[in-house]
Amino acid sequence: MDQFDLLVVGSGPAGRRGAIQAAKLGKKVLVVEQGKRVGGVSVHTGTIPSKTLRETALNLSGWRERGFYGRAYRVKQEISAEDLRRRLLITLDHEVEVLEHQFARNRVQHIRGKASFVDPQTMQIVKDDGEVVTVSAASILLAVGTKPFRPDYMPFDGKTVLDSDELLDIQDLPRSMVVIGAGVIGIEYATIFSALDTQVTLIDPKSTMLDFIDKEIIEDFTYQLRDRNMKLLLGQKAEKVERLPNGKVELTLDNGRRLTTDMVLFAAGRMGATDTLNLPAAGLEADARGRLNVNPETFATKVPHIFAAGDVVGFPSLASTSMEQGRIAARVAVGAIAKEPPKYFPYGIYAVPEISTCGLSEEEVKDRHIPYECGIARFRETSRGHIMGLDTGLLKMIFSLKTRRLLGVHIVGEGATELVHIGQAVLNLKGTVEYFVENTFNYPTLAEAYKIAGLDAWNRMGDIKSEI
Image (cartoon, rainbow, N blue to C red; front, top):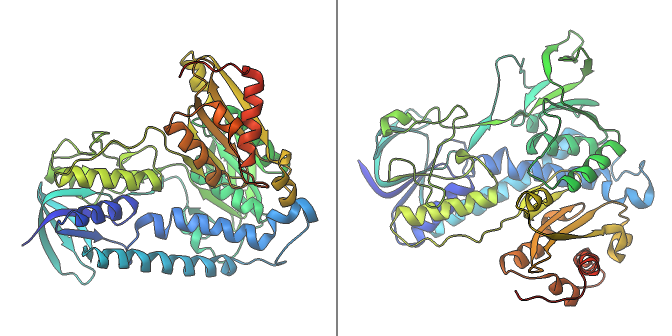
């Protein structure tokens, strides 16, 4: 039986970062990945594919240039599913190559197979050829990620009724699509296909969407979606989904409304991929959604030497935060000091348009009874926005009236997921409104929106510097 300092199950963001961190500390590490190639869900069906699909769709459709040349403008008149897949495969090959090189450079061993617990410190790995390998480790990190939730009442066929994993393998772009689920994944894919001029309808039983995002940002986002004729049927539930003989799909909603479409994407939630781990043998159990409960500071489970990180532990389920969780878990697992990460991290939603946020929303500030003021900038107010042909896009900052410190930054529009890091740095360094008013930004850039929003807030707050 092979003995390791750290056994990592899963090679997604949390698993890879945890494994490499432990290896850098001189530990003997093994990564087990059940997929055909390393990278996990993030590389093969989640983060990287969806963002690559988005970028390809925007480039080939000419979406970014339509502000100048009109809505009929196209870079490529006939866009096929193969056009989208070609760039995706090139990107995935690169990601896998980089990861394999990182493992080799840091002397991280990895093996393909399905791992399951034999006892709390021993796992059995069944390889593709049927060979069974048994390994033990002083510590174990579970970074198995999630898989799409697939309820029995959905007639999945991989062609007209699909989950988000299957969507990447479609043969033809649909003329119409219904997306069930207005969470991050559903909204990202709904808006990407809308940018490809697919007629998209978004359905969700909740009357609101993305409730963790500042409401003013969501109002602006919703306006943009409706302006391009996306149908938002919020507060409505699909009670019946039926494939028709003519190849289309019919949905019956709880209010009696019927919809006919070419394709249905079911994106209402994901499940932790823990069902094959034989958790009871390790003294663990998952919740109803297959997720594991951990200490939020160390990511240890109730079994002290077993850790879990990434999407399998639930919110925020971001590749960026998963990496940090994996790093912290690995350091604790091998007995190294793990510093607490900065308080504020950015949240990015790669929809069309992008949304990114960091810090407190206006609703959270109100709930905490903090006296505050907001500053707003619209991208069309910047010279760079004019150059790019932008007529949408909004940056919002929230400041404390008492300390004048930045409390939150919220952006919807082109480049939001890049721009947010300026606000993130100021938040974590406890900067004030004066930073944005007195600082110089490159001109012309979209980052200039920070100065415009800062001046907007400063004008409302008054030029009175209080003690910080």
